[in-house]
Length: 347
Image (tube, rainbow, N blue to C red; front, side, top):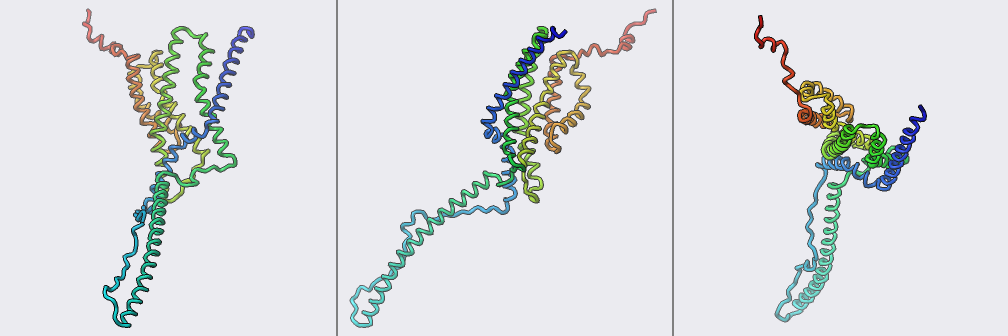
């Protein structure tokens, strides 16, 4: 007995070793690029926090419009004192002319000083305008300082490890599935082997669709609603460890939930369900979908609705797929009693 299963155990050990090695290599590569990965993961959160900042500061933020005079070389004073054209003939007139010349000299000095002051004021106003414009742009484009936090020493390092592990696991998943296929393929029939390829390809494609839908549709609305709610009373301080777990749960939940059409397709191929079966089960399926949405998403009604709504649509798509693969034969639904009534009575 042991001799019979020993080759299988050796093959299993080989496939597991290669799978673990691929995950380790993918983890190392992901850790090297953990900063771009974290940037991608936290992008929906940063957008939501930015929106909160705009809402909270909507009444307090002021936009300055300053138009200083640039290159103020012509801003000279218009102070001028005109000398009389006639030559004075009396001592009083000579004294007046002397006083006028003194005033003119003082006016020239004052005009030069005023011109320099105007130039300095224009440059200062220009610098102030550029500073205020930069502050306004920073308020528009950046999040509040300190809103994304960590509550433990080395929290950022552990987050990087966690993110790198999940990224490495997803990156190595195709190779791991291939090793699994090499292990089980020798024991499958030809028709069973034909079913595996579309199942793996279709499942991977729908998982990616679910993740992208969650990232680009669910998280922007969900995070903005959850963080904005009550932001006038509280300052949101998001723990990065909790956020990564929250984000991962949403991504995995939607990726798994979007497998519904693939599962329905293969159940139809096996002859276990028909389109009529799914139509009759629809009212129960809606309840199950909302229960699954509550289990696979964080405990807020908006995220649950954002998962349940596409799942109901996917259920309708699954009905069409099953109808194409394994349609229900409505001829078999005729009641035998009705057939007897239609037949003529033989005496």
